[in-house]
Image 1 (cartoon, rainbow, N blue to C red):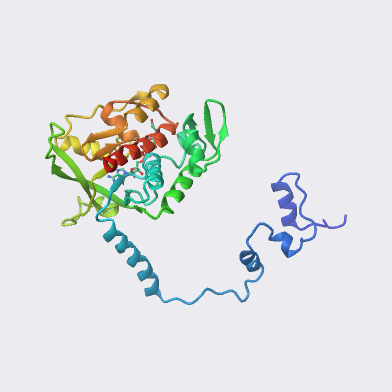
Image 2: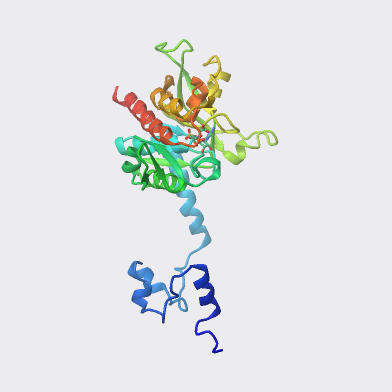
Length: 324
Ligand code: 48N
């Protein structure tokens, strides 16, 4: 029997991809690289003389450190700080960046990777469900989805999170400090006595997260500070890092106690979180699942529309301070 006319790898490719015909003789270079921009297309197949432009290691260090510390210097005085870059915090940052490009927005995220719980749907499944009208936010940001009537489905949660994150990071007035933990809140006496507690939140106290995680086994690792007249806290429901600001308000006796997140009830949970996103004490707005810890709202489980729209509402509440 004549040896097979196609190579073992082509035979495998045939098996691996089902009935698709293995490409006949290689197409022309243009056909093979169609869809790439010309400079990249010209790189394919021309690696023999390939080389990067020259560099000295210190140049890389300076390129990183100059920017980081210039940003830290600039953002030491911010207009609005968002604690937590989960789906709610990122939606708030997007909305603020769009509505008020004149304001200096600082996002502080404890994780190395921002996004919080929005990289996957429920139980590590990839699709993300949002109930209408949250599709309005998806259209605003440019996240494709499948319309299922009363709800929509983003084919992978990471498509939502990475798209919002990309939009936020591209904004000139928004700076993300990830791998950075808010360890405390800056407070001032509330002169005009708006609250019985008499406290106004005036900024955050931060440390690199890997430092924050070792206060028990290292000493004298004091934090840094960032001042701002408005803080939006979206640190999620109670967990190792979650519900930070509301738990801190209790420990500094600005809140009697937490209301404790209730059991799962999708129908009730999402409306409550969006409608009740608000300023808890002067200067501190709470949104997303952190709010459920104050109000004792139900949790909603693997549906994310309330997170996005709570972020939009938190942004609106924050801007109100600057429009007064
Ligand atoms: O995703 P999360 O946890 O919080 P939200 O409110 O943006 O979204 C909540 C959502 O993911 C759900 O929990 C869904 C809807 N499920 C509900 C349910 O019923 O189970 O993001 C919070 C972010 C995280 O990235 C944390 O790392 C970060 O906040 N964070 C902090 N960042 C800085 N300093 C801190 N002290 C801090 N604490 C938390």
